[in-house]
Length: 211
Image (cartoon, rainbow, N blue to C red):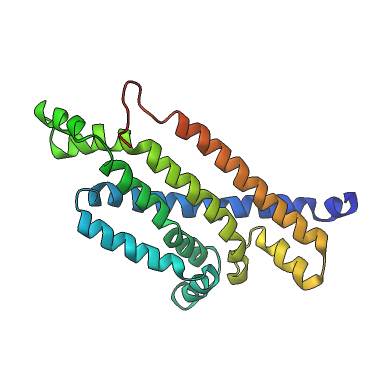
């Protein structure tokens, strides 16, 4: 074990940071796309159902196949991996955002409008804060997905801990496989724990989400 760490310790650190970078950028892009769209679509049930169905179909495409489809469009490396992973994690965030807004008590929204709030103000001051716990729940789920799936990004030259896993398989080196897999699991668990804490603090004081 010590010999392995002496030989690959520096590379493990680099690959862990690379893996985290790919995952966090993909997650951030997914959030920036899915949350605003989800809030806007929440008031249009037919359209939201159609969008969710489309996103659900995209998620049935195997991750490796989606990554491979990015190569003719964007080549190899981090860019196609981040684009593919961002698309892949849209569904949980989008779904939870829509459900979070739709489950808000209509009386709360009506009270805001009766106070003279515009639609934008209602969305900003009522819809988003009250739906936030549900949104973060979707982000938690997506974070675990993207960290796990980022391992496959190694196949298209994006780097990350997948390099250790697949090099270990090619070289029949169990230690390389275990090192990569354990670190991926560790990153996923730490991220999930952190977002769990954020989720618990996300409910605005004095407000409750109707479930």
